[in-house]
Image (cartoon, rainbow, N blue to C red; front, side, top):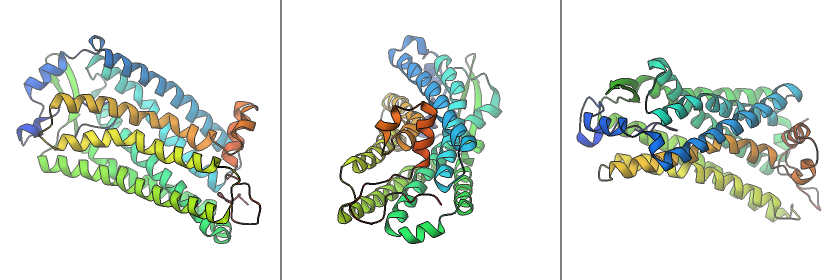
Length: 341
């Protein structure tokens, strides 16, 4: 499988039923001649990468500082802190893959080839699992407000986050096993070296199911329940909470759908290699953008965003993280996010 986020290199011997799954000389020659400076699309992707790196490091770094050191630890800040750490780690390794994109030459050794791939998938799974946790947490707070008020503790939240990371690490291990480097025509490639076509398919399908399909369905169900509950209780005077929910679901879907679509298309040997490669280049960039969009969608978009925007940036972030999404109501009914006690 072409690896996640800027790892769309020429490892397509599955199409040729090569059991050793090594990169073919023809494809490698094509790849080596594929210099980024000669491609307009590649140059645009490099610019996008730089933007993602800068905004991702700054945005997630500030969130980590505020949620981890400036605020009292709560269940809510635990979600955001872990999510920001996941995205920050990915953005910190993204420069290596960006340089690889620009030069088509991996100069960082086998360990970093495996490690950067592992970190990329770790970010994919951990960030998505954390978004699912946030969605489920909000859903429970709406359906069972009294129970949530009494049962939502920092200790339980920390345990849930820990389990999410353990599961993410487990699903990312294949990168450490099958990632490898190979010298060809004066350049070094960092690529996948699967031992069979079945292994390739199994890993790709597993990543799609656990890294996109199931999380997306859970998020859809959670926010559908929230919206139905809010409407039935006439909790909101405006459509603002619904617009935010739509933005959260829509961004998740749009960021990850292109990447997973072309990953699955790669398994179908009837698609041209050039089409798959181009699609993965664009899809991985869109997926990478999710790392700097998360702080915006899950932190900056508070219910009182416009009012907080007038405050200093640090105060705005601290207030947005600390609030649990107060929803205006005419009657004493459950709120969207339970306040911390």
